[in-house]
Length: 228
Length: 339
Image 1 (cartoon, rainbow over the protein chains, first blue to last red):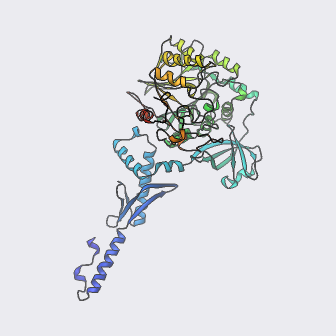
Image 2: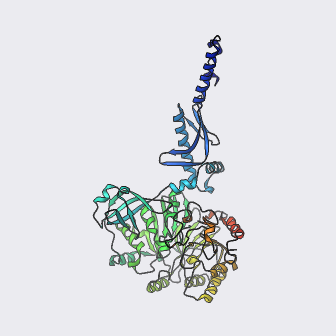
Image 3: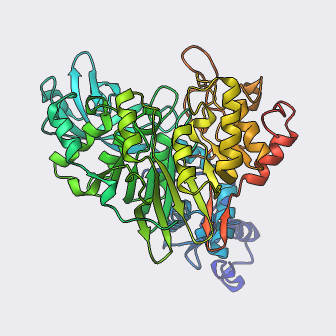
């Protein structure tokens, strides 16, 4: 911090008011460079982490590091913003790495780190905002005023045009297609279709071909005996 | 898994692999907790997808797995317990075969030979893990198809590890248990954990008196389970779990864990929302709408999705102690069902 203060020899002691102003200006500048801020949420890419308590982050221009009190991660960058971005990416990577692990898969150090993250991030909120992505096979049974789709397993969904790719409108009624769909994890409703591709029709129910297919399947008798 | 009034079991094998036994879909149940769990843990390959029988509360969500894990499924096992025209999962399966996403040789019809040994469905030699088919046999299966009753038979599978056995009973009937009992020379089949058949409900057409006797025989003489997991929904119109089933398990020393609390266990279930134990993010009771269309409460966790950690020294169920303590301490829960 001292390195940012002008030397006393550089100051004109005959002008005390100027001295005070200079010192104050340097203090303001130093505070600005050591910018401390409260963090309430962290956003990286498509992920938004709502924090269960506010964190305090600080950029040190001397070391070019961004740190957050209570968390072990360090972001590096020549500016406050770039260092904070770097810190957020490290936070995101570590959280996602640990989030996908079961407790017994974690090393002791990871378990401590996970406990720390759990105390900071509202994980229920995160889980409830992460859509479940499914690959789907279905058939259009109605096109206006909204799409009505019957899926292969017999379920039905209704979707507005704004939640479907535009190609879907070009598919004929009764057309079978494959899609990537996102479901709301809280309500189990289909939110939107990301991509659609037309496919050949599956066999109709009750078809003799279905019986023939069933009979063609191998029985468990062909499997090895089990010792139990 | 806490999937409401249905059944789904996931065996996470590590390295992005898993086994899925049953996956439901319906008005009181959902495949979503299972799909969410698989997505969360980065499962990219399903070693085995097995469906115990063709009832929607066990098989309707399996189509989701079939389609989502297209080209990434090792083996599919299904049970022909009804005419082909009624088997929705079979239809989806044929579609996948025709599209060449899965080969016919990867699909098997679940039934053991009459008088034959249990069959090996999957094995991990390195870790000495085996998934074994115990039931049904060919004739029982044919008889079930003739009855055209989707609960007339069900596959019974067992995960065998070096120190434990986990029994997945599907909706196996009392006929099935007698067949298994005979095969094991009338000895009790010992297992660490048993996923209780038919959600603790009826096992046959027995009247109430015979029903109690059937359950006493099943849990007292046929199977010896340390922990019994009842996969049941808060709202279910079938009266699951049966009081006689829970009593029989208690009498035989089996610790009972239910995924959701029902009005049979507690008269004021709403007081327990979101659950006796706080449901994890893989529980239907932690999301979804809180009431049925008719206004009845649904999806209130008891233990929620039950985690069983299988190690070299045996099984550990982390929630078990907390669950049993919560039941003992909660004045709302009737002691007659949950002690």
